[in-house]
Image (cartoon, rainbow, N blue to C red; front, top):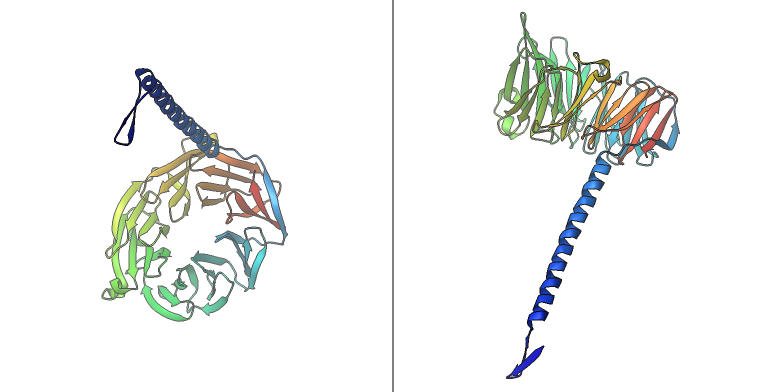
Length: 397
């Protein structure tokens, strides 16, 4: 290599041979980087598919909780643990299955709902209800008429559907203390309320009505607002939609601005703003057997009437926009449908199957003991299994 010096500066001039060597090293490094990127991509894809299509064969018991349970026992995932409730009380188990608090009441046929920190439990067809926060602080309150359905918002606002003497009443309570709203609905004017749901901010209530006019049947979806939007409206009603020849037994808020209404022959998605609007309507060409809804997904099970016994049912999942995420035929009998983070749980008396949203059966097991209830927990791949004589916290492996 030659070196020339001028005015205190050193200047290096590569020979042709050195230049070619440098280009060779550069191309070699480039090919190495490309090969490394391809290799990492292949590893990532392999790991993705290995995780997505992984099958679990064992259910390891993490903790066994000895407890006699009744048919009314239910549980659901709550924060980083599980809420368990029955006719004689409610308790909270953390992610390790340790009981953090326990409260007692006496409710025949208890029904429950939760949002944010708050949980509400009511006696179906009774007049009593309780509101609890995440520390187990409990407030009792009574309704004027038998309770048909109950919902709660994240501020503790409680919505009740009540069966009155001459019609139904929809009432809202502020943290189980002050009655905020009472709306009387009659079958002649509004229809019969099939289901209600309350937005998490407690301002908007969605109601599905069944309207019978002679031999004709239709469903009506009504939206009530108890904030500024509904102040000038009669009965705070800000919008309504009718659907002929359809029964809609399930309505659910998916966040504060999206609502899913699941009928016997269609799925309807709404956007709730200053004025509610219908965003999507998806025909359902099969008989809906079961429904489960979260803030992000809608899970449905259909009867496959024209298929073989091996494909007796179809499990299907939609996104909140109406996109079909998953479809899977299956044959196992079940009586409980749940949606968890990226998975669908199907549980029968002595069988449990867990499908991920790729349609892959991650886990299936036949049990010797009858399953009363199953629920996800605050930890991935951990579930609370309840039997007649015990409850077990178990994980897949």
